[in-house]
Amino acid sequence: LGGDEVECNTSHLLANTLFDQIEQEILERRQYQMQLEEFGAGELTRDQIANEIRVRVEHLKKIEPLRATKVVQRLMKSS
Image 1 (tube, rainbow, N blue to C red):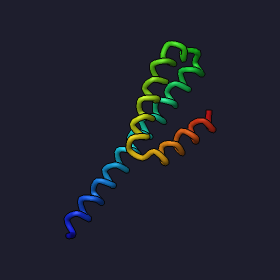
Image 2: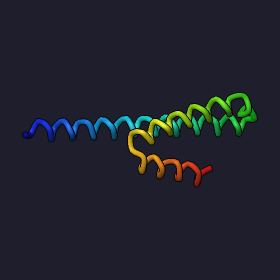
Image 3: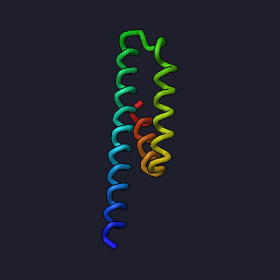
């Protein structure tokens, strides 16, 4: 009886941890690209970084769709 509850909680915690890690990766890539843009070197990596972010957003949507939508909305507001 209690084992199922623990397993469910553990899965939820792992999903949250993975979601947070991927979100951090997105933010780091976005910040890196913004720095390159400031220095005039953004064109070289723009497509690659955009693709990396896009792939990570898709991962977020698979883990927790509603929360992923909120992350994307925050990213769009701050651009």
